[in-house]
Image 1 (cartoon, rainbow, N blue to C red):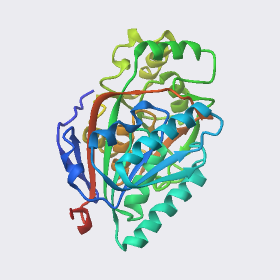
Image 2: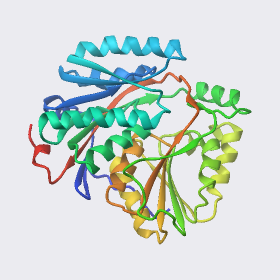
Image 3: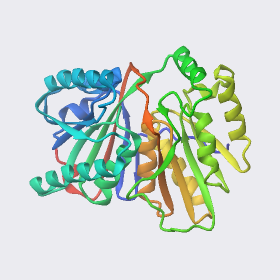
Length: 354
């Protein structure tokens, strides 16, 4: 609505420089890293990015969230660990609590990175496969990295997923009368992300910016509880929300209700257009007269990445993620496309060393 994405390859915001999005992963093959991070997952696409990278990794840390109640998920994670071990001289599983146990896991990840910074005696150069990391933890990494000066550079790889429409609709239909969705179960709770709090603790007015995925029905009440005075919706231009007639009736209704909210503004941005999403988010904040701009990271990992980068330069912006009771084991295959993003501290010399 009056705003269009700018097809750029580089964008500076606050102290960071962002470059997108390369399907030629040569930069990431040749660069030296202090640490490579990935996540063991039940999704098939969880190994696609590092497979495509095709290089030997000196030290690979694999975040493993506890799935003790799900033997099938554990088996898939074991298989991924075995496969990914082939790509690294030193493969280290990092055992964590369930992904919904954010506080305890946050401390473990902070300790891991801090120990590495102390060992190197400088900010780190990190490569992170963000494909299967929960959005809250991706944002935590950005906060730790650039608010606490742990990172000189955070490069990211993302393997796009293939979501068969039939499976999505089948899942949506089976969950129509439950407090569940395609990827999660239970009521969504709000998780304010550390390092991304608004400078106003008790705002008089609040505008809300949402990166939206494929769970519109549960998103609607999640947004409404924030009582937005102005609402910005960032929708994925390749997603099914662009053709509402193909959505289940319940999702069509929720989408219609959402777009009928007063003072709503919708933009469509590509899944891989991180720079466009950063630009739009900053522009949304600058046009806002509210004390707080609440950004809800509900959609893709790439758009959550953009919210984190935007918030580094916007003191009125806070970021909230959803925490469901549990996540469902939806197996997502890779569609063959792997993209890369570079985030570097513009004022840190170690960001530029090869």
